[in-house]
Image 1 (cartoon, rainbow, N blue to C red):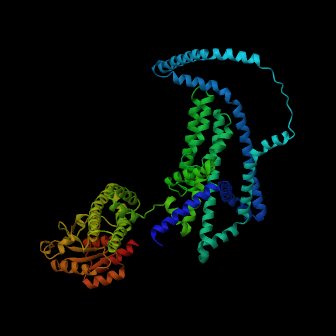
Image 2 (image 1 turned 90 degrees about the vertical axis):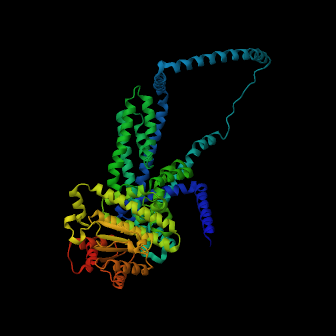
Image 3 (image 1 turned 60 degrees about the vertical axis):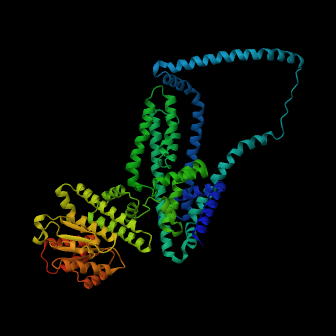
Length: 629
């Protein structure tokens, strides 16, 4: 099947799923509510079962208690809303007075006076036109009234009037009662048949790997249960404090607004703002001044900041596992499908999809699209930013990374894998020569900027020494051996490609940061016409950098040329894509003194060679590797 056909099939499937969700919302909405409630009620049920309470009795007790609380809250809210509706006309005078004061502000009420003049003129014009139009109509109506005779009217009670009235009373209640009954039945069914449902999901998702699938489903269920229960407890406490605060401020029907604030807070980012709207309007309507308005805003903002910044991170972590963009998209999508209830269910439903996407390969795209984990790895992000010519973001990421790690760790964990990705693209023929040059130039420039940021971040000498002691030492000029006190005692050169040269620049920058004066030469200097101009008289050590995994001949060529020009200098091979076994074979083949597979190993080996007189320097890479591990 071609790629275009697969894309078309995926789009058709997505359209069918969305259409089904929209058309069957009357059926799916109660089921979704039941699933979310079952996740919230599962921990109390398990707690009762752990105390030897039978499952049926535990489920019945928890479900009855939960829905009893829901029905009580709903009845109290309905009574409060009804009473508030009767009291609304009393607030008309306060609102009118505030509007008048606002209109009178600025320019001495000029706009208000102009508006009044225009209103009076319109009224006078309208009165004259109405009188002129009403005079003939009045004469005509008098004539018609004289001609008309009164018609007797008799009222007979219909035999089905009682049934009609009962129907008018019951019909509005049938929908909510039916929905509530469906939710209760599904909640009980899900809690009672939890293991059977899990087995069926295992059969559908991955019966060939039962242990892994079982662990994934159990982990997802426990995570979701803890998340939803924590959200329920936090939002319930938030709503209770809001209701209490509004009661003390003097806002009418404070209980209603507290419950509404707790429910709306399930909507991230804007839930608290939506909960503030109605109490704020009432504060404006009730209080002739502005003190109630101020205290209401302070109450909501203060509680939201404390809850989101202090309480939620301690109880359930810093996030729900969703990216901020995903939350907005999910809220828009589910609100469009299922209305206000879909807006409340947006985050729980999306969290379910993301958690399932982390464990089920077929749903992996949900985790990629909506999860809060970076879509690209750190190495992939570095490589992409080099191709996109966006070094600023890469520098910012490097600064945050080096706040907890060393510069050598960043070079090995981020830059080196990125160069490996570029090399694979070059071998596949998707990275053209001009892009290789661009990547090399970008890495050279960026490595210098990152090293500069590293020095700024550790400007104080004690901080720099303490941070580097766990990784690589910072050597002073007087600590170097006599043979290393030349202007540039270290030469780093790429074996063949632009990517080899980029890795050479990274190593050179790392060593410069740790006190070794380093000289970088381009691979073109190894050609027959340029090698004569290469002055290696003061070089103590030469490093051949290679990212290429399939061309050892170039390493042989570069090593022979360098050894022939500087037989007095030691030779280190930087084999960034090799392992220890392949590195040992290649080192012996070219007669090098040592090799390194990571930037940390190479830097540690060079620092040892520059500061100590070791006869068996060939073991430096092994020691550095063990120290790094």
